[in-house]
Image (cartoon, rainbow, N blue to C red):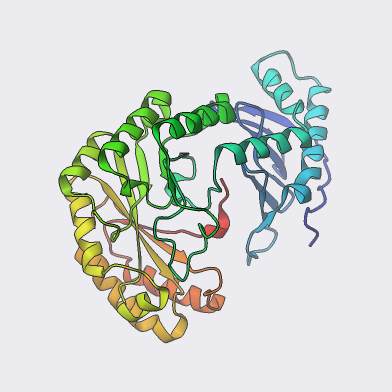
Length: 378
C-alpha cells in the first residue's frame, strides 16, 4: 500500500453538515467525508476504505478499513501526507463553486479552503513550540485539552515504556505555565470549543508539590474556564514520594480533579520485575483506595500480552486478584492495553490474553475498555 492511498472516485456532489463545533463535508454515500474544527483545520476524514486522523503535530494516523481483519494503523509524516491537503482543498473548492448560499457553513468552509499544506506545516511548527510530544492519553480523554504542567516522566526507567525517553523531566514554573497557556490559546483559538476536559501532563503531573499543583490548576481554570468545567484528569504513579495523602487528594477533588489513571500493568510480581515496574501491588491498592475515599475516579491500566505465554497464567491470576481487591465502582475504569514496542509478544498472544481478561472481568460493575496506543494521535 502506498503511504498515501489514492482518492476514490467522486461520483456525486458533496453535502455540507454543520455541527456545533465541527463541520462535515461528505458525499451522499458517505464514501468520502472530511471534518473540520472551528478554525477550518482538517481533523479527520475518510476516503474510500481509508480513515485519516489528523494530529496537531502535523502527523496523520492512517487506518485501512477495507477488510474485516484490519492491519495496524500507520503514522504518516507531514511530508507523506501533504498531498492529502491538496485533495481536501479540491473537494472544498468543488462545493464552494457549486451552489452553497452565503451562510455560516460557507464562511466556515472558506476558512478551510484558505488552508493549504504550508498552513498545516506552520501549525505543526507552532505546536512544537508549545508542546513537548503528546505521546499518550487515556481513551476517555481523547478530546481533552492537554496542559503540560511538567514535561517527561520523573521515573522514566520502565523496561516497556519509551514514550518519554528523549524528554528531560522538567516542572513548569508559574512563568513557564503562563507562556504555555498563551501558546495553547493561540494554537487552538475557536477550536478550543471542541475540547471537553483538561488533561494534566505529562507522565505524573500529580507528583508536583501540592501548593504549586493547586496554583497551576487554578491558573488553568481561569484561562480556560469552559474546558475546565469538564474536570481535570491525569496519570498518577503509586511510588513517587511523597505520595499524595487522602486529604491532599480531597483538596484536588475540590479543585476539579475528576479521574486519575494508574498503571498497574500487572499484579504478578515476577512479571512486574521483568517490566522494571517500581512499587508494589499493595502500594497501588492503597493509593487507589485513598483516591476513591477522596471522591476521585480511577482508571486502572493493565498490559495485555506482557510477558507472553510464559507469564500468561500468573499475569491473569494475580492481576485479577489485585483488581478485585481494589473494590472499584461503577464510575471507575479498567483499560486493557496491548503491549507494544520492543517487548511486544506475537499478536495471537495479545488476542488470547485480551480475551481471557475480558472473560474474567465480564461481570464487573466498572467499564472495561481497550486502550491501544497505536490507534490515537493528538
